[in-house]
Image (cartoon, rainbow, N blue to C red; front, side, top):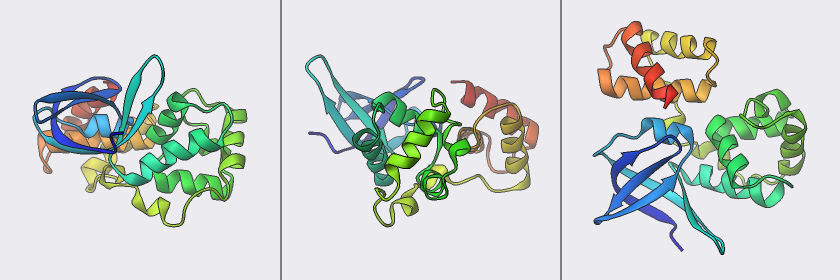
Length: 199
C-alpha cells in the first residue's frame, strides 16, 4: 500500500499529475488546488490514499495529511459519497473551511462543490458532525493559503466574480505569482490565473 510519494512532476493533467519517483511515473489524482500549484520539473510530495479494486488500482494524492484524512472520512461516513464526490469536496473546501462549514451547519458552503446539491450537502454535514479528529482543520497545507498583496487579492476577487470558487481562484493566482513573480500587476496575474483556473 502506497502512503506517500516524493518525486518530480513529469506531467500535469486536468485532475492528476504524473509524479516521477526514481524513474517510475505514478499517475496520482489530486485536488484542484494541488494540480494548479504543480509545475513540471519541480519536486512534489504527496500523501497518498491507495484504492484497490478488482478492475483498477488508483492513487489519490494530497498536499497535507488533513486533506487525505477528510477524503477518507467523507467516503467512510457519508452514504452515497465515493471517491469522486469526496475529491470534489476536498478540491472546493480546504480542511479548515470544511470543518467550519460542518460545525456551523453551513449548507451553502458545502453545496458550492460541483456535483453536490443541497440534499447531499446536508447529508455531508449531518454525517460528519463529531467525526473530525481534533486538530484536523489546522493541517490545511500551504496551498490553501490565500496569496498576499493588493494585486493578488484583486486578481483572486476578479476570478471569484467570474464564478470560480475562492479556493480555486486563490490557487490559480498563487500559481500565477510563482510564474510571473511577486511584483506582477493585476492584469498579468489575472491573465495567468485564468489559464491556470481553466486547466
